[in-house]
Length: 248
Image 1 (spheres, rainbow, N blue to C red):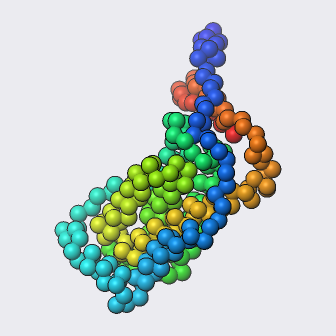
Image 2: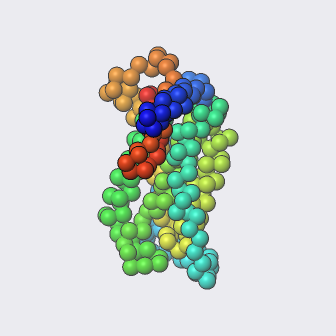
Image 3: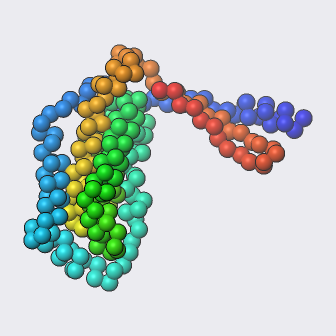
């Protein structure tokens, strides 16, 4: 009887809702333009220049290492805020903010951008093998934390404009600053990481038409994402939880 009552109770309170993605004002493609390469290319070039001895970037890196945070204090905020822009990019539309792409396309672009970013970051780290300023490890170039933060920030800028993008870039810039402040990276590492993140975010949307064709996504279809959520209770394990299903 207890289990029957529980089942009836859960069935009664199970929420099923279709949350409008009110940010969708158009589903235009983020087409490739050569000028989109200027900022990331400049940042990556400046960061890579830091690998050369007696370059301005290398001089700035060592000056920052000597003069910034001389007592070696550590603040781990960069370990957490690097992940903030990514989820915000996906979910901000459900708060009423207007975006150029619907939720489905934001998921596809974000997944593509972050996969590219992780792949490039790991490949470069293992190829360049620059020593970190605070240890003997040779995986400093370039900063993965910074690349993660700037990927999310640029995705927000693309979809929501500079109003929200400026705040996202402030978070990303703080992440980059803290990587240098904590002596985890050289200046060139965070510059290259920022450029890579911006480039990968744009690439995520450049590849969106490919996924539309590959997955046969009909751009004329205006269905909103549907989310169904149901709480559950396992009496044997004395566990509770929430089961969610999202249909794009």
